[in-house]
Length: 421
Image (cartoon, rainbow, N blue to C red; front, side, top):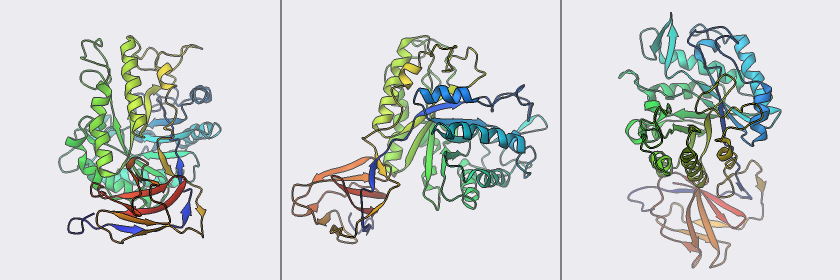
Protein backbone atom coordinates (compact mmCIF):
# COMPACT_ATOMS: atom_id res chain seq x y z
CA UNK A 1 0.00 0.00 0.00
CA UNK A 2 1.30 3.46 -0.79
CA UNK A 3 2.65 5.02 2.37
CA UNK A 4 1.35 8.49 1.62
CA UNK A 5 -2.22 7.12 1.77
CA UNK A 6 -2.30 4.31 4.31
CA UNK A 7 0.00 2.48 6.68
CA UNK A 8 0.22 -1.28 6.65
CA UNK A 9 1.84 -3.25 9.44
CA UNK A 10 2.80 -6.87 9.32
CA UNK A 11 2.88 -9.48 12.07
CA UNK A 12 4.61 -12.77 11.42
CA UNK A 13 3.12 -15.82 13.13
CA UNK A 14 5.01 -19.09 13.59
CA UNK A 15 1.91 -21.20 12.94
CA UNK A 16 0.88 -23.63 10.25
CA UNK A 17 -2.50 -25.04 9.43
CA UNK A 18 -4.13 -21.96 10.92
CA UNK A 19 -6.55 -21.68 8.03
CA UNK A 20 -9.14 -24.43 8.14
CA UNK A 21 -12.26 -25.01 6.15
CA UNK A 22 -15.11 -23.38 7.99
CA UNK A 23 -18.52 -24.98 8.30
CA UNK A 24 -20.60 -22.07 9.55
CA UNK A 25 -24.15 -23.36 10.04
CA UNK A 26 -27.39 -22.26 8.46
CA UNK A 27 -30.55 -22.67 10.44
CA UNK A 28 -33.97 -21.39 11.37
CA UNK A 29 -35.75 -19.00 13.72
CA UNK A 30 -37.78 -20.93 16.28
CA UNK A 31 -40.39 -18.36 17.27
CA UNK A 32 -42.91 -18.54 20.08
CA UNK A 33 -41.25 -16.84 23.03
CA UNK A 34 -41.78 -13.53 21.23
CA UNK A 35 -45.54 -14.13 20.74
CA UNK A 36 -48.42 -12.33 22.44
CA UNK A 37 -49.31 -8.74 23.19
CA UNK A 38 -49.68 -9.21 26.93
CA UNK A 39 -46.45 -8.35 28.71
CA UNK A 40 -45.11 -10.21 30.47
CA UNK A 41 -48.09 -12.49 29.86
CA UNK A 42 -48.61 -16.07 30.92
CA UNK A 43 -46.33 -18.85 29.75
CA UNK A 44 -48.07 -21.48 27.56
CA UNK A 45 -51.06 -19.13 27.17
CA UNK A 46 -49.60 -15.98 25.63
CA UNK A 47 -46.28 -17.41 24.49
CA UNK A 48 -44.20 -20.57 24.42
CA UNK A 49 -40.71 -21.91 23.75
CA UNK A 50 -39.69 -24.60 21.25
CA UNK A 51 -39.72 -28.10 22.64
CA UNK A 52 -37.18 -30.87 22.28
CA UNK A 53 -38.96 -32.60 19.39
CA UNK A 54 -38.73 -29.41 17.32
CA UNK A 55 -35.01 -29.15 17.95
CA UNK A 56 -34.69 -32.77 16.89
CA UNK A 57 -36.63 -32.16 13.68
CA UNK A 58 -34.42 -29.27 12.52
CA UNK A 59 -31.31 -31.12 13.60
CA UNK A 60 -32.42 -34.07 11.45
CA UNK A 61 -32.61 -31.67 8.51
CA UNK A 62 -29.08 -30.42 9.13
CA UNK A 63 -30.24 -26.94 10.19
CA UNK A 64 -28.09 -26.61 13.28
CA UNK A 65 -28.26 -22.89 14.03
CA UNK A 66 -31.28 -21.70 16.01
CA UNK A 67 -32.17 -18.03 16.31
CA UNK A 68 -34.26 -17.85 19.47
CA UNK A 69 -36.47 -14.73 19.72
CA UNK A 70 -37.38 -13.63 23.24
CA UNK A 71 -38.93 -10.54 24.85
CA UNK A 72 -37.25 -8.02 27.13
CA UNK A 73 -40.43 -7.54 29.18
CA UNK A 74 -40.41 -11.24 30.11
CA UNK A 75 -36.77 -11.84 30.91
CA UNK A 76 -36.52 -8.56 32.87
CA UNK A 77 -39.96 -7.63 34.13
CA UNK A 78 -38.70 -4.52 35.95
CA UNK A 79 -36.22 -2.18 34.28
CA UNK A 80 -32.78 -2.53 35.91
CA UNK A 81 -34.19 -5.47 37.87
CA UNK A 82 -32.99 -9.03 38.15
CA UNK A 83 -33.54 -11.48 35.32
CA UNK A 84 -36.70 -13.54 35.76
CA UNK A 85 -35.58 -16.97 36.99
CA UNK A 86 -38.41 -18.90 35.31
CA UNK A 87 -37.78 -17.27 31.95
CA UNK A 88 -34.05 -17.75 32.31
CA UNK A 89 -34.62 -21.43 33.00
CA UNK A 90 -36.78 -21.79 29.88
CA UNK A 91 -34.12 -20.20 27.71
CA UNK A 92 -31.37 -22.35 29.19
CA UNK A 93 -33.49 -25.46 28.63
CA UNK A 94 -33.68 -24.67 24.89
CA UNK A 95 -29.91 -24.16 24.84
CA UNK A 96 -29.44 -27.54 26.51
CA UNK A 97 -31.75 -29.27 24.02
CA UNK A 98 -29.61 -27.73 21.29
CA UNK A 99 -26.31 -28.61 22.93
CA UNK A 100 -27.40 -32.24 23.19
CA UNK A 101 -27.61 -32.21 19.38
CA UNK A 102 -24.49 -30.14 18.67
CA UNK A 103 -26.68 -27.23 17.63
CA UNK A 104 -25.85 -23.57 18.26
CA UNK A 105 -28.21 -20.84 19.45
CA UNK A 106 -28.47 -17.09 18.91
CA UNK A 107 -30.27 -15.21 21.67
CA UNK A 108 -32.39 -12.69 19.76
CA UNK A 109 -33.85 -9.77 21.74
CA UNK A 110 -37.01 -9.30 19.69
CA UNK A 111 -37.98 -5.80 20.81
CA UNK A 112 -37.38 -3.34 17.95
CA UNK A 113 -35.73 -0.88 20.42
CA UNK A 114 -38.94 -0.70 22.45
CA UNK A 115 -40.26 -1.82 25.84
CA UNK A 116 -43.91 -2.06 26.86
CA UNK A 117 -44.63 -0.01 29.98
CA UNK A 118 -48.16 0.11 31.40
CA UNK A 119 -49.48 -1.36 28.16
CA UNK A 120 -47.74 1.19 25.90
CA UNK A 121 -44.65 0.67 23.79
CA UNK A 122 -41.89 3.12 24.72
CA UNK A 123 -38.84 3.87 22.58
CA UNK A 124 -35.33 3.68 23.92
CA UNK A 125 -34.35 7.29 24.46
CA UNK A 126 -37.67 8.29 25.94
CA UNK A 127 -37.76 9.90 29.37
CA UNK A 128 -38.56 6.61 31.11
CA UNK A 129 -36.52 4.24 28.92
CA UNK A 130 -32.83 4.97 28.50
CA UNK A 131 -29.88 3.38 26.75
CA UNK A 132 -28.63 2.51 30.22
CA UNK A 133 -31.68 0.28 30.71
CA UNK A 134 -30.96 -1.93 27.71
CA UNK A 135 -27.25 -1.92 28.53
CA UNK A 136 -28.15 -3.20 31.99
CA UNK A 137 -30.22 -5.99 30.46
CA UNK A 138 -27.45 -7.20 28.19
CA UNK A 139 -24.82 -6.93 30.90
CA UNK A 140 -26.90 -9.28 33.04
CA UNK A 141 -27.67 -11.61 30.13
CA UNK A 142 -23.96 -11.84 29.27
CA UNK A 143 -23.18 -12.78 32.86
CA UNK A 144 -25.91 -15.44 32.81
CA UNK A 145 -24.96 -17.03 29.48
CA UNK A 146 -21.23 -16.39 28.99
CA UNK A 147 -20.18 -19.93 29.84
CA UNK A 148 -22.74 -21.62 27.57
CA UNK A 149 -20.68 -23.72 25.13
CA UNK A 150 -23.16 -23.69 22.23
CA UNK A 151 -24.05 -20.00 22.37
CA UNK A 152 -23.41 -18.75 18.82
CA UNK A 153 -23.91 -15.08 19.62
CA UNK A 154 -25.87 -12.32 21.31
CA UNK A 155 -28.44 -10.86 18.89
CA UNK A 156 -28.66 -7.53 20.68
CA UNK A 157 -31.83 -6.15 19.04
CA UNK A 158 -34.23 -7.32 16.37
CA UNK A 159 -35.07 -4.78 13.63
CA UNK A 160 -34.45 -1.33 15.11
CA UNK A 161 -36.59 1.23 13.29
CA UNK A 162 -38.10 4.73 13.52
CA UNK A 163 -35.98 5.75 16.47
CA UNK A 164 -35.75 9.09 18.23
CA UNK A 165 -33.43 11.54 16.50
CA UNK A 166 -31.42 12.12 19.68
CA UNK A 167 -30.97 8.39 20.32
CA UNK A 168 -29.63 6.78 17.13
CA UNK A 169 -29.19 3.04 16.86
CA UNK A 170 -25.40 3.43 16.66
CA UNK A 171 -25.28 4.93 20.16
CA UNK A 172 -27.58 2.24 21.57
CA UNK A 173 -25.59 -0.60 19.98
CA UNK A 174 -22.24 0.75 21.17
CA UNK A 175 -23.39 0.92 24.78
CA UNK A 176 -24.80 -2.61 24.60
CA UNK A 177 -21.45 -3.84 23.26
CA UNK A 178 -19.65 -2.02 26.06
CA UNK A 179 -21.91 -3.65 28.64
CA UNK A 180 -21.57 -7.18 27.27
CA UNK A 181 -17.78 -6.94 27.15
CA UNK A 182 -17.58 -6.19 30.86
CA UNK A 183 -18.81 -9.75 31.45
CA UNK A 184 -18.03 -11.75 28.30
CA UNK A 185 -15.06 -11.15 26.04
CA UNK A 186 -15.50 -14.27 23.90
CA UNK A 187 -19.02 -14.53 22.46
CA UNK A 188 -19.95 -12.97 19.12
CA UNK A 189 -22.14 -9.87 19.29
CA UNK A 190 -24.64 -9.74 16.43
CA UNK A 191 -25.69 -6.21 15.47
CA UNK A 192 -28.77 -5.79 13.32
CA UNK A 193 -29.13 -2.84 11.00
CA UNK A 194 -31.44 0.14 11.36
CA UNK A 195 -34.64 0.48 9.32
CA UNK A 196 -35.89 -3.04 10.12
CA UNK A 197 -32.35 -4.39 9.44
CA UNK A 198 -32.98 -3.98 5.72
CA UNK A 199 -30.16 -5.32 3.54
CA UNK A 200 -31.46 -3.33 0.60
CA UNK A 201 -31.39 -0.04 2.57
CA UNK A 202 -28.20 -0.83 4.44
CA UNK A 203 -26.07 1.94 2.97
CA UNK A 204 -28.75 4.55 3.66
CA UNK A 205 -29.48 3.61 7.28
CA UNK A 206 -26.67 1.41 8.61
CA UNK A 207 -23.39 2.36 6.96
CA UNK A 208 -22.15 4.01 10.16
CA UNK A 209 -22.27 0.70 12.03
CA UNK A 210 -18.86 -0.06 10.53
CA UNK A 211 -17.50 2.40 13.10
CA UNK A 212 -18.73 0.42 16.12
CA UNK A 213 -15.93 -0.60 18.46
CA UNK A 214 -15.55 -4.04 20.03
CA UNK A 215 -12.38 -4.72 22.03
CA UNK A 216 -12.77 -8.43 21.22
CA UNK A 217 -13.23 -7.79 17.47
CA UNK A 218 -16.11 -10.27 17.33
CA UNK A 219 -18.94 -8.25 15.81
CA UNK A 220 -21.26 -9.84 13.25
CA UNK A 221 -23.64 -7.60 11.33
CA UNK A 222 -27.18 -8.83 10.73
CA UNK A 223 -29.46 -7.95 7.82
CA UNK A 224 -32.95 -9.19 6.91
CA UNK A 225 -34.27 -9.85 3.40
CA UNK A 226 -37.79 -10.57 2.20
CA UNK A 227 -38.84 -10.79 -1.41
CA UNK A 228 -42.37 -9.37 -1.59
CA UNK A 229 -43.06 -5.94 -3.06
CA UNK A 230 -42.57 -3.90 0.12
CA UNK A 231 -40.00 -6.34 1.62
CA UNK A 232 -42.18 -6.74 4.71
CA UNK A 233 -42.40 -10.52 4.55
CA UNK A 234 -46.22 -10.46 4.67
CA UNK A 235 -46.64 -11.57 1.04
CA UNK A 236 -50.26 -10.37 0.61
CA UNK A 237 -50.00 -10.52 -3.19
CA UNK A 238 -49.17 -13.09 -5.82
CA UNK A 239 -45.65 -13.64 -7.15
CA UNK A 240 -46.48 -11.62 -10.27
CA UNK A 241 -48.27 -8.83 -8.40
CA UNK A 242 -45.23 -8.46 -6.16
CA UNK A 243 -43.03 -7.98 -9.23
CA UNK A 244 -40.84 -10.87 -8.18
CA UNK A 245 -38.21 -12.51 -10.39
CA UNK A 246 -35.66 -15.30 -9.82
CA UNK A 247 -32.80 -13.09 -8.62
CA UNK A 248 -34.76 -10.53 -6.62
CA UNK A 249 -33.19 -11.81 -3.40
CA UNK A 250 -29.70 -11.43 -4.80
CA UNK A 251 -30.42 -7.87 -5.86
CA UNK A 252 -31.83 -6.97 -2.47
CA UNK A 253 -28.99 -8.43 -0.42
CA UNK A 254 -26.14 -7.21 -2.65
CA UNK A 255 -25.77 -3.77 -0.97
CA UNK A 256 -25.18 -5.50 2.36
CA UNK A 257 -22.78 -8.09 0.89
CA UNK A 258 -20.79 -5.37 -0.88
CA UNK A 259 -20.62 -3.37 2.36
CA UNK A 260 -19.26 -6.37 4.25
CA UNK A 261 -16.62 -7.01 1.63
CA UNK A 262 -15.61 -3.36 1.30
CA UNK A 263 -15.19 -2.99 5.04
CA UNK A 264 -13.80 -6.48 5.71
CA UNK A 265 -16.61 -7.32 8.17
CA UNK A 266 -18.57 -10.43 9.11
CA UNK A 267 -22.23 -10.74 8.18
CA UNK A 268 -25.30 -12.86 8.83
CA UNK A 269 -28.84 -12.89 7.44
CA UNK A 270 -31.14 -13.30 10.42
CA UNK A 271 -34.45 -13.50 8.56
CA UNK A 272 -35.63 -14.51 5.08
CA UNK A 273 -38.64 -16.52 4.00
CA UNK A 274 -41.01 -17.34 1.17
CA UNK A 275 -44.55 -18.70 0.89
CA UNK A 276 -45.14 -22.15 -0.56
CA UNK A 277 -48.10 -21.19 -2.78
CA UNK A 278 -46.00 -20.73 -5.93
CA UNK A 279 -42.95 -22.80 -6.84
CA UNK A 280 -41.30 -19.71 -8.29
CA UNK A 281 -40.76 -18.43 -4.76
CA UNK A 282 -38.70 -21.55 -4.08
CA UNK A 283 -36.46 -20.64 -7.00
CA UNK A 284 -35.99 -17.18 -5.50
CA UNK A 285 -35.03 -18.76 -2.17
CA UNK A 286 -32.64 -21.21 -3.82
CA UNK A 287 -30.87 -18.51 -5.82
CA UNK A 288 -30.65 -16.28 -2.77
CA UNK A 289 -29.12 -18.95 -0.53
CA UNK A 290 -26.70 -20.02 -3.22
CA UNK A 291 -25.50 -16.42 -3.48
CA UNK A 292 -25.06 -16.17 0.28
CA UNK A 293 -23.16 -19.43 0.30
CA UNK A 294 -20.83 -18.23 -2.43
CA UNK A 295 -20.10 -15.16 -0.32
CA UNK A 296 -19.54 -17.13 2.91
CA UNK A 297 -22.58 -15.67 4.68
CA UNK A 298 -24.88 -17.89 6.74
CA UNK A 299 -28.42 -17.24 7.90
CA UNK A 300 -31.58 -18.40 9.65
CA UNK A 301 -34.92 -18.87 7.88
CA UNK A 302 -38.06 -17.16 9.22
CA UNK A 303 -39.57 -19.26 10.67
CA UNK A 304 -40.31 -22.44 12.53
CA UNK A 305 -41.94 -22.80 15.93
CA UNK A 306 -44.85 -24.58 17.56
CA UNK A 307 -47.64 -22.00 17.30
CA UNK A 308 -47.55 -20.84 13.68
CA UNK A 309 -50.57 -22.76 12.44
CA UNK A 310 -51.19 -21.84 8.78
CA UNK A 311 -48.65 -19.00 8.64
CA UNK A 312 -47.51 -18.79 5.02
CA UNK A 313 -43.77 -18.74 5.75
CA UNK A 314 -43.76 -21.48 8.36
CA UNK A 315 -41.50 -24.49 7.84
CA UNK A 316 -42.93 -26.33 10.83
CA UNK A 317 -43.93 -29.74 9.41
CA UNK A 318 -47.52 -30.93 9.12
CA UNK A 319 -47.20 -34.14 11.07
CA UNK A 320 -44.58 -36.10 9.17
CA UNK A 321 -44.92 -33.99 6.02
CA UNK A 322 -42.26 -31.36 5.31
CA UNK A 323 -43.20 -27.94 4.06
CA UNK A 324 -42.09 -27.26 0.45
CA UNK A 325 -39.54 -24.67 1.55
CA UNK A 326 -37.62 -27.38 3.40
CA UNK A 327 -36.53 -28.95 0.10
CA UNK A 328 -34.48 -25.79 -0.52
CA UNK A 329 -33.29 -25.20 3.04
CA UNK A 330 -31.87 -28.72 3.24
CA UNK A 331 -29.49 -27.86 0.39
CA UNK A 332 -27.77 -25.18 2.48
CA UNK A 333 -26.64 -26.60 5.79
CA UNK A 334 -23.26 -24.90 6.16
CA UNK A 335 -20.98 -22.59 4.31
CA UNK A 336 -18.40 -24.88 2.83
CA UNK A 337 -14.91 -25.36 1.52
CA UNK A 338 -14.91 -22.04 -0.31
CA UNK A 339 -14.92 -20.29 3.07
CA UNK A 340 -11.65 -20.89 4.92
CA UNK A 341 -11.44 -19.30 8.35
CA UNK A 342 -9.36 -19.34 11.51
CA UNK A 343 -9.10 -22.78 13.02
CA UNK A 344 -9.33 -23.24 16.76
CA UNK A 345 -6.46 -25.74 16.52
CA UNK A 346 -3.30 -23.65 16.32
CA UNK A 347 -0.24 -25.75 15.67
CA UNK A 348 3.14 -24.32 16.62
CA UNK A 349 5.78 -24.59 13.93
CA UNK A 350 9.20 -23.72 15.37
CA UNK A 351 10.83 -24.54 12.02
CA UNK A 352 8.78 -22.00 10.06
CA UNK A 353 11.19 -20.36 7.63
CA UNK A 354 8.67 -18.08 5.98
CA UNK A 355 9.54 -14.40 6.06
CA UNK A 356 7.37 -11.57 4.76
CA UNK A 357 8.64 -8.04 4.29
CA UNK A 358 9.01 -5.03 3.97
CA UNK A 359 7.39 -3.81 7.16
CA UNK A 360 5.63 -1.49 6.55
CA UNK A 361 5.40 -2.12 2.81
CA UNK A 362 3.96 -0.24 -0.13
CA UNK A 363 2.00 -2.20 -2.71
CA UNK A 364 3.78 -5.56 -2.66
CA UNK A 365 4.88 -8.40 -0.40
CA UNK A 366 8.20 -10.21 -0.57
CA UNK A 367 7.87 -13.78 0.75
CA UNK A 368 11.00 -15.80 1.39
CA UNK A 369 10.81 -19.56 1.90
CA UNK A 370 8.69 -20.31 -1.18
CA UNK A 371 9.44 -21.00 -4.83
CA UNK A 372 8.67 -18.85 -7.82
CA UNK A 373 5.43 -19.99 -9.42
CA UNK A 374 3.93 -21.09 -6.08
CA UNK A 375 0.34 -20.01 -5.58
CA UNK A 376 -0.27 -17.57 -2.71
CA UNK A 377 -3.81 -16.73 -1.61
CA UNK A 378 -4.76 -13.78 0.59
CA UNK A 379 -8.05 -13.99 2.49
CA UNK A 380 -10.02 -11.42 4.41
CA UNK A 381 -10.40 -12.23 8.09
CA UNK A 382 -13.90 -13.64 7.47
CA UNK A 383 -12.49 -16.04 4.89
CA UNK A 384 -13.17 -14.43 1.50
CA UNK A 385 -10.48 -14.87 -1.11
CA UNK A 386 -9.34 -11.37 -2.11
CA UNK A 387 -6.03 -12.01 -3.90
CA UNK A 388 -4.75 -15.11 -5.68
CA UNK A 389 -1.34 -14.74 -7.31
CA UNK A 390 1.70 -16.75 -8.39
CA UNK A 391 4.97 -15.80 -6.74
CA UNK A 392 7.42 -14.09 -9.09
CA UNK A 393 10.90 -13.19 -7.88
CA UNK A 394 9.65 -13.99 -4.36
CA UNK A 395 7.13 -11.15 -4.70
CA UNK A 396 3.36 -10.65 -4.77
CA UNK A 397 2.49 -7.34 -6.39
CA UNK A 398 -0.58 -5.18 -7.08
CA UNK A 399 -1.95 -5.17 -3.52
CA UNK A 400 -2.92 -1.51 -3.58
CA UNK A 401 -6.63 -2.42 -3.98
CA UNK A 402 -6.83 -3.98 -0.51
CA UNK A 403 -8.85 -1.88 1.92
CA UNK A 404 -7.93 -1.43 5.57
CA UNK A 405 -8.33 -4.60 7.58
CA UNK A 406 -6.76 -7.88 8.67
CA UNK A 407 -5.78 -10.46 6.06
CA UNK A 408 -4.50 -14.03 6.14
CA UNK A 409 -1.73 -15.18 3.81
CA UNK A 410 -1.78 -18.83 2.77
CA UNK A 411 0.46 -20.99 0.60
CA UNK A 412 -1.30 -24.25 -0.31
CA UNK A 413 -1.85 -25.97 3.11
CA UNK A 414 0.52 -23.78 5.11
CA UNK A 415 -0.39 -20.62 6.93
CA UNK A 416 2.30 -18.00 6.31
CA UNK A 417 1.27 -14.99 8.36
CA UNK A 418 -1.19 -12.27 9.18
CA UNK A 419 -1.08 -8.79 7.69
CA UNK A 420 -2.88 -5.88 9.29
CA UNK A 421 -3.58 -2.89 7.14
